[in-house]
Image (cartoon, rainbow, N blue to C red):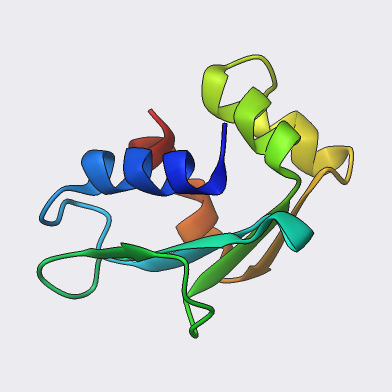
Length: 99
């Protein structure tokens, strides 16, 4: 899946705003990033590198495995495949976005 496809999928999940009410950035390294800011209305989902509450650093392949249910996010974190910078409580709420 491409960065554009992931961005569009996130836009459809967030919609005009939801219960998340935080900002998070998925940093895929050289593959780019997706930023979600649900603190504003309507919510912003884009590829801008702006300040957020929490940054999730993960490869795109591992992200896809986590999002599809092939890999457990907590296990990926313990194995060092997923790194969190910032507010850990935001990362714990990401299930509402990832489905």
